[in-house]
Image 1 (cartoon, rainbow over the protein chains, first blue to last red):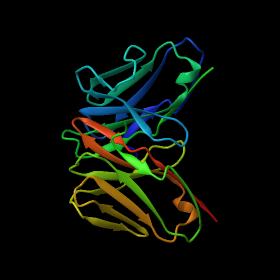
Image 2: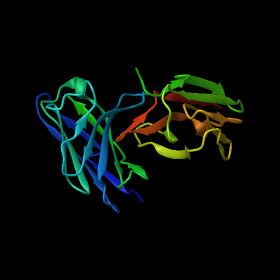
Image 3: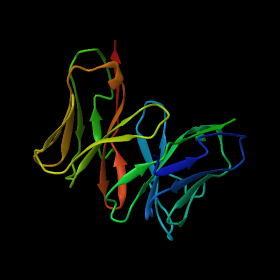
Image 4: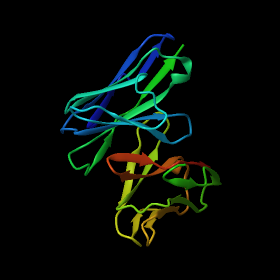
Length: 115
Length: 109
């Protein structure tokens, strides 16, 4: 069964609103979580790395004020897309790693459509 | 510039043919991973290569890690339609986990 769960799997929101995507580790404590964005037939682009209890590290070109990442507990990280625009429509995937990043587990992904 | 460059980016072949996907970097890695992803799903880990020159086989898939641990290849023998998907190499560097540029494979029956 899944060890990392993402919710919602699909969400449609209106332009200008904010939407939150949750990533939960089910059977282990995820000290590190990664958030990716993916366009059709393209690779996963790392957006940010979050460590529990500290601020996320954003990749170059990713707006931290637009993509708010919170990793307040060892089992939950959230990605909030603020003031969403149609160009934010994409497939967002989280992954979680245990201490030492010995194993990385991926969520099922979340489709975001901004209309 | 991408940390991990994959080639080819797109590949469409007939069932039964062989193919090789390459993952190249100018950096040295302690390990590399290969994933396969279906549309709308998360990537699934296929293999982790750790030792330079290492060869690992997974049924019809053969993975090789370069001697210098800067590159890797994935060879599929007698491809089947079920092999269709996005193939990704990936690596850890620092505290980040990056994916390669991806190879989208289509196997035509």
